[in-house]
Structures are given as C-alpha cells and as structure tokens.
Length: 238
Image 1 (tube, rainbow, N blue to C red):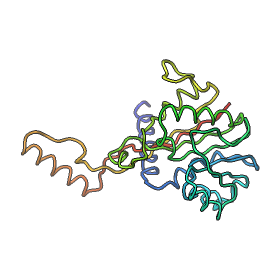
Image 2: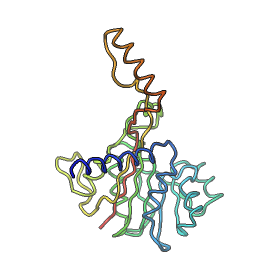
Image 3: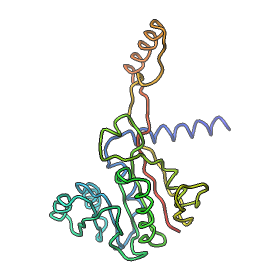
Image 4: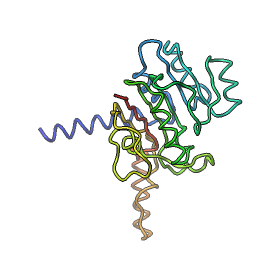
C-alpha cells in the first residue's frame, strides 16, 4: 500500500510538472480564475501590464467589475482604450479602495520588483482592502539564471514567506506579521526544461566526456531536467 501511495504521488507530481512546464501566463491565469467570485464583486488585477489577465477573463465571460492597476502611465492609457477601470497605481502607496471591499486580488509578476520593506507595506495594504472570504492570487518568479537580466528585478521571494506572513503569524520574522487569518488554497510551481549540462560534471576529462555523452543521449531520447522558476499561490482570507 505504501508503494502504491508513492506511485500515486509521483504520478500527480509528474502531471503537474507537465501542466506547468510553460513560460506562458495562461495556465496560471486559468488556475487563478477558478477562485473568482460568482457575482459582481470587485476584482482587482495589480500589475496588469498589457491586460493579459483581463483578456483571459473576458474570453471566459467573467468579472463584470474588474479594475486594472499598473504603475506605468503609458500602460494605463493603453489599458483604458480596451478595458474600463484602468488606474495608475504605484505599489508603494495606498490602494485606492475602501477597507474590506475587494473579493479577489490578482498580483502577477509585480512583487519581485519591490524591496522587502516596500513589499511588506504593499501586502499590508492588500490585507486592508481584501474582504473576509476574499482571494489573493500571487504569481511570481523564483531565482533562475536569467532573473537579474531584468534590471527592475529587486529580489525573488519564496512562497513560504507569504504563507508565514499571512497564515501563521510567523516566528522570528524580520517585519511584523500581517495576519493569521488566511489559509492556503493552492500552491503550484512553474517549471522550465533545463539542460543536463546545468548539473553533474567531473574534474577528470574522460569522466566528464562520458557524462556529456550520457546527458546528450538522454536529451535526444526525450529526457529533460525540470527546474522550478516560478509559482502561483492562492490564499483565502477567513
């Protein structure tokens, strides 16, 4: 029975890796959209960018009351042409919503652009405006070789940090806990297919050559190395 359980868990992990082995945002938009409110409650997308999430939701005929926030003035102007309720917003400031008024908050690839102190203040603002029963959907990259090629990237944040600050109150945290009133609904990782050359090697030439041949044969026959390079975390406020 234990072996069957191990196999089932491995199969589940294998399926998830295949599903989220992608550089596209749509699989993660789809995951987040499963937690949208059913009615006309306020839904907010922070860091809306080119409006990808809004287009995805429109295609799904969801979210009649969607607000799009972004820190780039030109981006907001472009969003306003195709979507209503586009607002210029800098994540270091107060969110332009009353307390407990938002039922779904989507933050995709914005948190890595904030300093730890700025991020803590931003998360406190999210907690202020999120209603009881509301959903916070966070998508962000992890550290990978190309992370710091974008000069606006400040720091990759591990999903456990958000769980500590929102769910458990945390112990020995650098900043004050934000809440204990959230629960984890879902945590999935994004993967990329890495080369075997990123792994084992040897200081001995012939051993290194042997490993190179084995790795090349493995890649030619469909094997690849999966590397976590991002995540989507869904939290619900109790």
